[in-house]
Amino acid sequence: NLLYDALVRLGFDVVRPGGTFYIFPKALEDDANAFCMKAKDYDLILVPSDSFGVPGYFRMAYCIDTEKVERSIAAFEKFVHEVYGR
Image 1 (cartoon, rainbow, N blue to C red):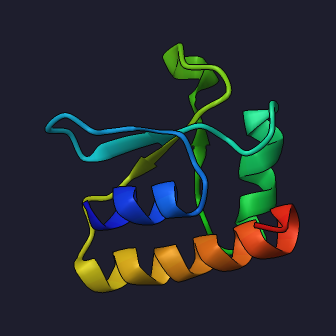
Image 2 (cartoon, rainbow, N blue to C red; image 1 turned 45 degrees about the vertical axis):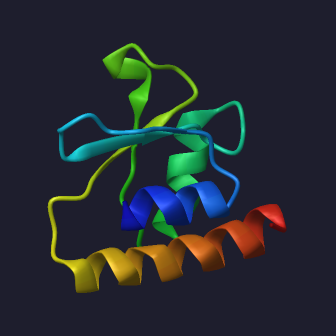
């Protein structure tokens, strides 16, 4: 719930994971590929979900330890603030 709650707080529409280690947030712009490319500048590796049949969303795996999740959240906060003004 740590990552899910943080993404929702940042304004993402997120499909709550149902027992998997992937999460599918909606990109903050229509082009999920462009969104994911911009995220790379913040050391966030995201996969556009178009190839998974979910256009406009991106996929993240969160099968990592809590410390890495917390660092990812900090990177997301910076990315969303600097690029999208949220």
